[in-house]
Each structure stands twice: as structure tokens, then as C-alpha cells.
Length: 112
Image 1 (cartoon, rainbow, N blue to C red):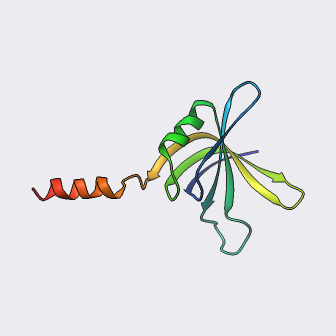
Image 2 (cartoon, one colour; image 1 turned 180 degrees about the vertical axis):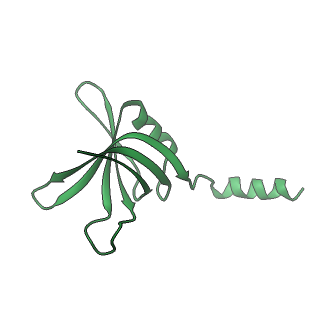
Image 3 (spheres, rainbow, N blue to C red; image 1 turned 90 degrees about the horizontal axis):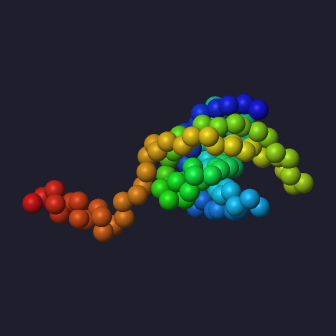
């Protein structure tokens, strides 16, 4: 296994599963910028466990950029191979959390 740090963009909403012992696992597909264009797949499956999984569900949404640290592994499926990152730490990088109402309120208070 390889330990790595990546800046990734969330492609779809994180979804939660539970193990038999009630441990929360969140899976989310993300995209990263590859070193060489056209070489391999730039989509990654993130696995987040425990309390960190609940935080990912609560705070991060589609099109957010986050910094993740974790162990990178290659998984084999009957159809294809894919990369998976077991996340140990998550940091916000660029979040798209303001909705239209919050943005208009900020603009109104700024011009008063």
C-alpha cells in the first residue's frame, strides 16, 4: 500500500453504508489531476470510516475540492481495475457551500 496526499474534486454525493458491527463507511467517487494527461484513469473511489465518515456526509458536497490523506490500493473487479483510497484525514480546500439565498444576504449586508 502507498500513503498519499491528493487534492480531489467530489463528483457525486457521498453515500453511507454500515458494517455488521454498525461502523459507518462512506463511499464517494472523486476526480484528481493526473501527472500525465491521457495515462490511466483519473477517477478514484474514496472509503471513509467511522466519525470521519459522518463529517464527510455532513460537510462535503458535489463539486467541493478537498485534500485527502490515506492509503492507495488497486482493486480488481470482474469488469475493470480501479483505484481506491482508504481515507485517514480530510481537509477542506474549496467548498461550494453557499446557496443563492445566503449569497444574496451577504451582498445586501455588504452594501448597507
